Length: 178
Image 1: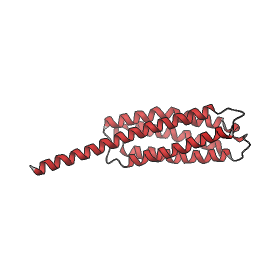
Image 2: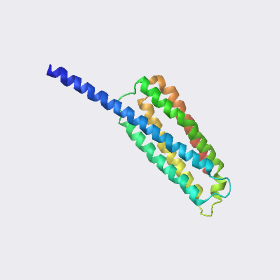
Image 3: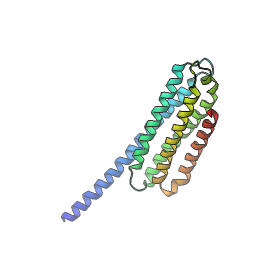
Image 4: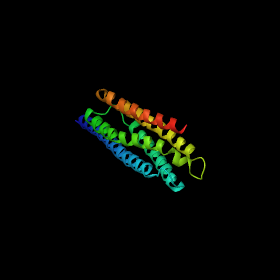
């Protein structure tokens, strides 16, 4: 009887830990969504002419925050043992997919703002943007690859498609600043 109770408690503790991890990943993705949306709004708000160093600094600061948020989310995903359930996988993938067009918009618009950033009296801003893009790309790839490792096989094609689409967006933006 004692063995059965201990076994039951062990199973419950593993289930609670798995649930806590999924909840943490979902919270991380909510944080990522907020950070990506804020960065996208700042990029879109930056004027095509007459921009300021302060405005460029806001974009840089938000990019750095997003890099940190991606790192945290990746660490939390890597702490997950085993695959997600199909239900959890769908929920998480749906949340990530909702961010995808916002990321792609930010990358596209950022390339369009290159001339405005080059025109700033402080030299080197495009080089800083390029460094941010490379760091964002690296952390986004780590995030996506970590997510793919815990994704149920039924969702792998969709998850891979999202990752590849964002990777193409980063490639274009990095090329635009190289």
